[in-house]
Amino acid sequence: MADLDQRAAEILNANDRGGFTVPSARLYPHQWNWDSAIAALGFAEFDLDRAWTEIETLFEGQWPNGMVPHIIFRHDGADYFPGPSVWGCEGSPPTSGHSQPPVAATVVRALYERDRSAGARRARALLPKLLAWHRWFHETRDPEGRGVIAATHPWESGRDNAPDWDAAMARVDPQGVTAYARHDIHEVDPAMRPTQDDYDRYVRIIEWGRAASWDHLRITREGPLAVADPGLTFILARADRDLSALAEALGETARAAEIAAWIDRAAEGAALLWQDHLRSYAALDLRSGLPADGVSSVGFLAFYAGLSDPRRDARLLATLDRILSSAPFGVPSFDPAHPKFDARRYWRGPTWPVMNYLIGRGLEEAGLVDTASRVRADTRRLIESAGFYEYFDPRDGSGAGASDFTWTAAVWLAWASPSNA
Ligand code: DGY
Image (cartoon, rainbow, N blue to C red):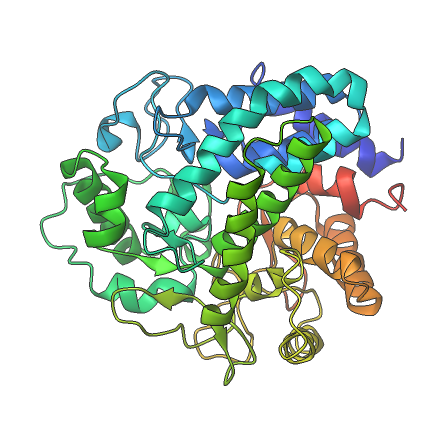
């Protein structure tokens, strides 16, 4: 194994807490949903059995209504805010009250295809759970059946402080929020994290959900925030296709029509999210009906979703090429030409290897080889020169956020490493 491959495997092993990994030893000391799914892809490069276990432990947190929460709290230490008592969710293990981008079905398909005979039993056991989770997303986060999936909390999108939520967040009243103490700003430079004002609103939205007894449908319809997210929409659309392929490979076709209807609907959703003046897809505030005013990198996941559209693809690719030409280390999470761009502040500018992986895979599959190689080469250069950081400054490639980050190591092993030619 090359040195960095070795180092990446060491990071995954060091962040392994026995069946599940923490995204980062101190900043995120529990099990996070999409981080775990991506971690499994990394483990699969050297320990396929351990990769399956990561997904299986993630589903230990699944709610009876199908929802797989964004955090599963794995110990009762007071080292993370907001912990279980803030969420007030019932059930064991304790969890947060909303979900996160559903990459797990895509990962389960990949694990199964690596070794069908070793994976068949485990894939078959996970299939109904994945199906229930996807159904939860379609029914409670798209109750009108428009083909767009809403984030009801910025954390549900996985992109906490993206400018996509600014207008909706401005309407959340932070007055009267229960006093609390953040941990994150003692682990990472506060200039790289969401602001205090953001946090007050994050906590207010949790308080609303808790008061609504985590009635997910009601939260989507009446809660403080509901923004149709291209990230959730495209990642779920991709995962639906993978779920369908997996079910078929396992001979479990009873639900094929249900999944096919979801996949069809995603094409209608994509049309709703397309913003011609931005030459990209953009988040859509479901309360005001207004789109986001700038380009976030999740728009480029349309290729990953397999939602090719002849009228839009060339324009979307031109937008990505424009953004890449303005950022030495792409893909920045937000358009560097926009006044809200903030190179080191979390999802308002930095480049994230995990997003590069998803975007890059989509470009490769769509045959857009030049742009795909650029995205992969940038990811490789970033990790080679700065290390396994959570995210990176797209201007100079310096590392930001937490170091020794689980999904950065996993993306290296599964995709960015030169040994993965
Ligand atoms: C955090 O704590 O910053 C997470 O992103 C919430 O999931």
